[in-house]
Image 1 (tube, helix red, strand yellow):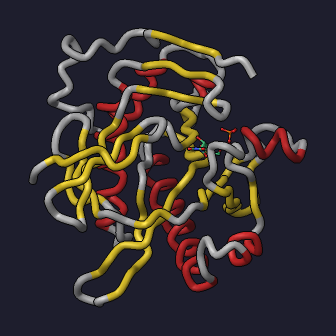
Image 2 (cartoon, helix red, strand yellow; image 1 turned 60 degrees about the horizontal axis):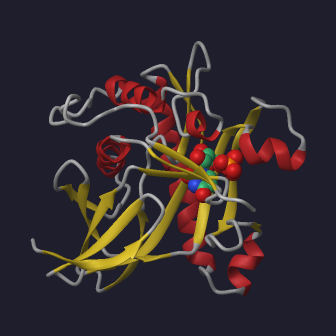
Length: 263
Ligand code: UDP
């Protein structure tokens, strides 16, 4: 598989073309951003851990019948994935109230929701990924009714599977973000909805079940320190502390640079 030119660079990942039109390479960077790009840092080793954690979670989901974009992990920072047309809607699944939900609606932090709550955000950095209703999605043709039905069903199944996986290692899956895309299914000769992007401590809130210690990107957002150590802890509990991650080689230190942009 030949790595071609860069097709897209996002905040935490880069996508490269390959010599196969249906496949691309997803590269995990060490860059971290929060608050709509206002806070930035390079966290050495984060890309390696997210690559490995996301690979493990997506493989586990595909073993449960969820179709994902992942073909295989290529190396410490890269995965070979199916090219998909990303639906410009982020799906947020929440089990406990925290983050923007508590701020927006004044809900008490940590409230256990009676059932998983799904929210939709329009994927736009310029607009700060605003919360949208299901009717916005249809009105602006971001996805059709059948696609949203599939996406909702998949999101709830993913939540069930991941909640169980994390519970087994004493971690509460508080909330997370999913992205879906349309990819070509050769056998069916049509596009189908598949899970895309990544699932990692960058995109989930993960709390230690006993102490409620945060083991996710909130450590960066809230300046709690020990970011990499927490991501490593998640990998360790999942039983996948990457064998090829030579800790001496990859400097798991403090963020090397934290910049705040003026508003
Ligand atoms: N999330 C994400 N990317 C985003 C927005 C949210 O991965 O652009 C994840 C976030 O890590 C959390 C969940 O989605 O696990 C819900 O985030 P929330 O809406 O509370 O946003 P925040 O408080 O981070 O602004």
